[in-house]
Length: 536
Image 1 (tube, rainbow, N blue to C red):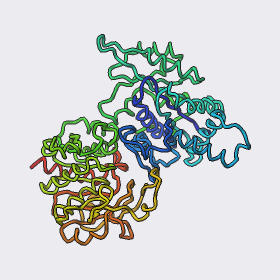
Image 2 (cartoon, rainbow, N blue to C red):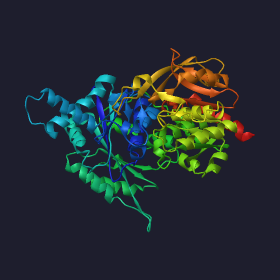
Image 3 (tube, one colour):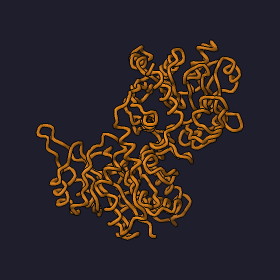
């Protein structure tokens, strides 16, 4: 069949839920038997988000092939359950870098390089790569940002051109917009949506479907008003109230008939009947009353919770598996250094220390690991969380008072964590870490091996520094188990303390492979231990 395209744009404000909506629609189409591919177009000039501050961009989501991508790709993988690749995300920076490299090579035969056609042609080429690499029948494509942004105009122009190239019958434009409420009157306003659609139409794109997002019920009359002023059919304005449970979004869209609406507009017939029962059960399980366990998430970027999007979702997945409600206490590691907010840690049933970069707040993370070790509190460390656990163990158990990572103290005489050998000649910051999927051999008789239940796994990595093998023997003598190693035995992947209820940490990022229906074993193990502690 001819490949069909769903183009998602956003209106009024950013962070309106465009990525979740696109992911949920992808699930509905996959359930109807179609092969789905997803792609995110990011308008910023950075080559990728790998060098961006989490405060600027939120979490950097890593794929199997090592691509550092937008956090929306996490939503795509968690909902649609497809393993994505680097063609699923590209930026303005990549488009311009490729175009300029072509020009330097002489590919354009002396022509003047312009946004149209050269930049838009490169955008279209990259869009077509998804179809070629995946063989997808339906490609879902999300344009980052908001209609009206200067940065996104070349992307929208490229989509306008694609509509004519692939045929209007083979593509749909879905506009996800926000309906604000006037606080004094409680009135929902449609005017911002009308303006965003007008901006879209001014560049030659008319939406086929409008998703009208709001925090409260959207009356049918408001949808009819939007349809009238935005020139779309009445049944193509879909009211979407903010969901209390994220994984209810595809169910809401299904119940509103959106799956069949898309197929009708694309001239397709479902290949199979969608089975949404597992998702309905998932939402029911989330909603039913159950005991609460508290997890202190000790991070450096907790002011912006999106910086730990996948960690938060992985905890929720594990909570469902353990039949508990998880309450996350967000703790800034700098506060612990100042002897603040310790009550949030002490009143929690488990401690989780996620990844991060730079020396700010590191000692607070070390203190959190020490508290977990000394007080037998269930602990899970992710990447940097493994490194600070190692530093604490060296200081507190091996009495190496100056133990540190050479990332934070280049002059330390005991670099428990040191730069990887193949990283020592690297000068560029972007895309040069140990990135992507690598194998890990689990050691028999360990908590990690028991959690996974298999002898070997593959996990996604994002780091430059590693455990210094010079200290392995001493650590083992004093009760540290190296429960996961690279197959050649050279790299430490998982550590745990033997005489502890659950103190496990990984050099990789297990949160990236957790799914609602398949929670990650290390997170399941943490909440199982936390549940047992809460009972006591």
